[in-house]
Length: 459
Image 1 (cartoon, helix red, strand yellow):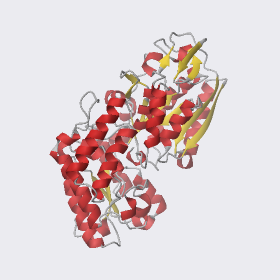
Image 2 (cartoon, one colour):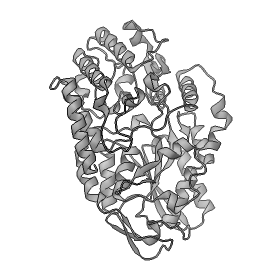
Image 3 (tube, one colour):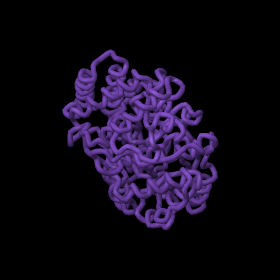
Image 4 (tube, helix red, strand yellow):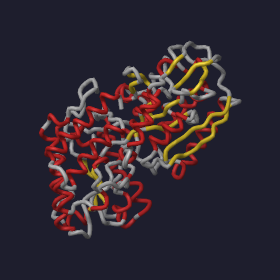
C-alpha cells in the first residue's frame, strides 16, 4: 500500500545490498539435512536450490508484520492460534515492526546477521533487496502448487530478480489497496475548487494544488513535498516508462512529460503548496491532514480509517474521489504487500506452511471484512465473496471501499519496481530542482544518468 512507501535517505542500503548480493544461494535438492548457504548464512540444503521443500511441520518460528499489531492484534492472534491448533508441535512468535524509513536497510542487516524473521511482511523495495541478496525462499521451487489461490496479475507482481537477474517468486501477494483522492472539502472550497469534480489528470491535480497554495497563504497547504511518495507511482499513472522493458536502464528522461512533472513540483514548492520543511521529511500527510492543515491526504484508502479514528472533526469534512486515470487509462493499484519466507529459517517447512495459511482465501477474506480497514485480497476465491460485490453507504469510509472495489476489476498491478538506491538517486535530483538548485531539465538528465550507473552496478 502506498502509505508504506519508503522515504528518507537510503544510501546505506546500497552498501548493504552490494555486500550481500554476491553471496546468493547455493546448494539444492529436497533433503533438508546438510550444509548450504543463503546469502552469507549456513542453512539446510532443502531451503535452497530447485528441489521441493520437505520435512515435518514442527518447530518454532517468528512472524514479522509491519505496523499491524495495534489495530489488528485480535485478528492475527486468532490466525496464529488456528495454525498452531491445526499443526501440533508448532509455535509462532509474532513481532511487529514500525515500518519506518529505515525498514529496508534494517531488514537487510538482519538478513546479513542471519537473524531474519522466518515469515516476514515485506514491500516491493525490501523484497527486491532481499531477493537479490539471496535471503528469501524461492517459493515456486519449494511448493509447485503455491500459485494456485492467487489472482494471476497479483501473482505476476510477486516476482523479483535474484543475483543472476532471473525473476523468481520469493513472495506471496498478501493484500492490496487501491488509490484515491482524499481531501478536505472545506479547504478545497476556500480555494475555489469543486470537491464533486476531481481532476482527470495529475497535472490537473497540480493545478488544484496551486489554487490551494494561493488560498492558504501558509496557513494551510495542498500536500507534502517529498517526491518519494510520488516516484514512480505518478509516472506509472501517466504511463511514463521509468525503466526499459528488461529493467536494466532508465528511460524516464526520454519522455518530455517527466521534465514537465518536475517543473510542476518545483513551481508548487516555490509557491507554497507544500510545507517547506517537508521536502526531505519521511512523514506522509496523515498528521497535518488530521490537523486540518493539508487539503489532500494520502492516496492509501486505509488513510480514511486513520482520519476517522484520530480526527472526527476533519473526517466530517473529508470526501474521497477517483485518483486520475491519466494516460494509463485505468487505476494503478501498485504492488501489494507481500509475505516472504526466509531462506535462513531453521524450520522452513513450518514457515512455508504458515505463510500459505496466512495468505489463503479464508484468512484474506476475513481480514478484509474488518470494519476498520480498507484493503483488498489477492486470491481469486476471496474476490468472489459478496462483500466485495455489494458495497453500500455514503460516508467517506464506505465510498473509499466502493471506489477501490470498482478499480480492482481493471486495475494495473504492475507498478514499476525501483530498488531503494535507484529511487533515492532520482528523488534526490528532483529535490534539487524543487529547491531551485537545478533546472528541471538538468535534474531529470542527471537523475537518469545516476539511475543508469546504479542499474549497471546491480543496485
